[in-house]
Amino acid sequence: MGDQITNQTQPVPVQAAQPQAEAQASAVIHVIPEQFYGAALKTKINPESTEGAPQASGGKSKLAIIIGVLLLIILVGGAGAFVYFNRDALFGKPTPPPVVAVQPTTTKPTPPPPPPPPNAPSNLTATSTSPQSVSLSWTDAADSETGYRVERRTGDRTIYERITDLPPNSTNFQDGSVQASSTYYYRVIARNDTGESEPSNEAVAVTRPLPPPPPKQEPLPPAGLDTDSDGITDLEENLFGADARNPDSDGDGFLDGNEVFNLYSPVGKAPAKLLESGLVKEINGSIGWSMLIPTKWTVSMDAPDGSAAAIDSGHGEKFLISVEKNENNLPVADWYLAKYPGTDKSTLMQYRSKGGYEGIIGPDLLTTYIPWGNRIFVFKYDMGKQPFINFRTVYSMMLNSLALKGLPQEMVPAGTGQLPFEPAATQPGAITQPVSITSATPTVSGTNATSSTP
Image 1 (tube, rainbow, N blue to C red):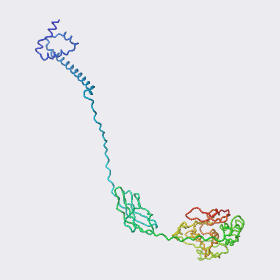
Image 2: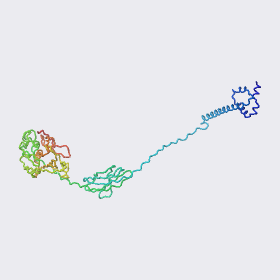
Image 3: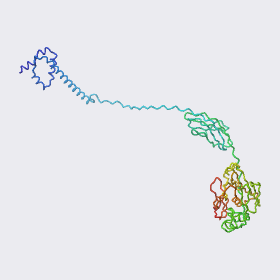
Image 4: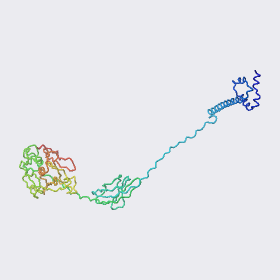
């Protein structure tokens, strides 16, 4: 068997004919695994079948290549793994590159171009509305202004000075920092963030002069002698037959002055009316007014229709009636201020009659004005040369009895404080005082004048 194997393993023709295949076979023999070695020794080689040798040799060659590739992969993989896990020892720990902060890039929008300077204001006018005020007005010709500057100069200067700044779209301004009887020049300039406009046209105003001072108001003369302080003077007591030493002549609980003022008799038990007592009489003017006066007094019509009349007391004092026109139907205070310019409005007093007629009392406190349609009824106390007001309560009594045609009456109760110069009903010396038309609440001298007179 051993000879057989020896003869079979030495195929000379094959080695001579195919040297390249022998070399490959020798190479294969060196790498055959041990487990296949015994089988190779037992293998019989058929000398006659030389044609299959190249085929067997070719199969072994493929197997060897595969095995080699596997070994190469194992070798390379192992080496690579060794190098990877020992890279720091072999090559040193790599230094990371520095971190560079990347700034975000922002693109800013291109801002729009600024607007051009605004157009200049036009048509500037300046008007003096009072001695201390000038009114300015102009046309707003700009559409991009952020404000206006108002400038002023006086007649003796050439340089303008700013007096105020105004918001956009302004078209007027009231200058209240001027002096009376002075000349002022004005101009207005528009402005925005880009710049200023050209100045407006120049406007000039001459302020009004101050009105003449009102005449000095003389103090009201004192009332005549009133011995018992009942609200009527001793002369008035004599007119009505009352007791000058008894404040309640008829003993009905009401002072004589309060009774006469409210059209009651001071010598008859309440509610005795004056007109029924025979102590007064009625007079009238054909223009449409009527009133009561003491029986002993006389009246003269200075105008046939009674638009001017005079009542004579026989003691040097008169009471004058006049009816004046008020064609524009102005409120009575406005009518008075137009007729007497320069009057301090606060010197005009509120007036209300017993019949509910409302009006004003003039600064002299001796003239009453009552509106009557397009007319004003005026009733004046003319003292003549008398130093005292002897008939104040009778003056009020005549006004309280006044009736004006077409003007309805609404009787005002006594003691309400609404009737100026009303004597108190029970408190001697207390008289309701008139108040300015600029006030709202009447005041009373002494104690409040109250009354329960019927």
